[in-house]
Image (cartoon, rainbow, N blue to C red; front, side, top):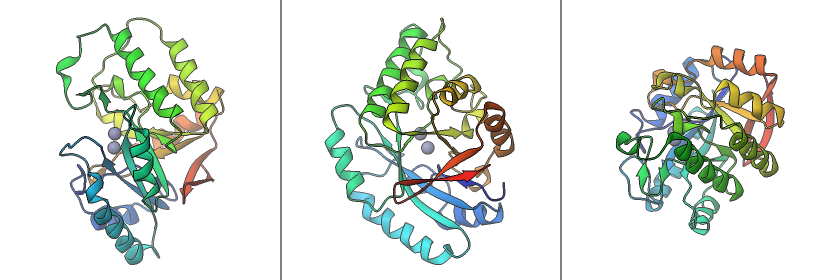
Length: 260
Ligand SMILES: [Zn+2]
Ligand SMILES: [Zn+2]
């Protein structure tokens, strides 16, 4: 999709399959205006994320790729940082020590359960209870003030797990907090390729966000070059239908706008 942005992608430094260079060349090929790398950074020692000690490697590689291809495409430096309640100071220190353009805050853990990678605990609670736990965690991440973008807002539905009853009140409460925080929500197109088969967040969620005048940006959560800007035409159509006519761009943790 020519002239657009893609702010959520992973390289071999976390759990992606390609280098920064391979991802960048694919993005140039697709005519993207701007990309942002957002490798996983996690306080827990997991195989799919960079640890604090690895971060100078990432910063150096980002600088190298910007120097090499910056005349062909805008390359931004982001991270996808796992939120853990009670660890806000450590997370803030990580963010402060990196020359970042934006920070995606994601919830992949409920206590020690990595719920988007391990299906074994689904069914332990009612889905209503699970959604409540998940969105309370998202609310804490939003309230922490650490992040610019919320990653895959309704990731808890990934394995097509849906609440038993209407959760509109919980969503409205969450939207109010997002609005107050000044955060941006990404329309993450990866969900369409998962069992839930819809974007994160869903069209219904997007309507709630729009009614609260919450800004959005666009991302593919790519782990492979061919996934860059995946399903973007459908995403743009949905955004316009919902009433969005511009999306957020980032540089140096400051927002600007791109018309769609
Ligand atoms: Zn994620
Ligand atoms: Zn991701």
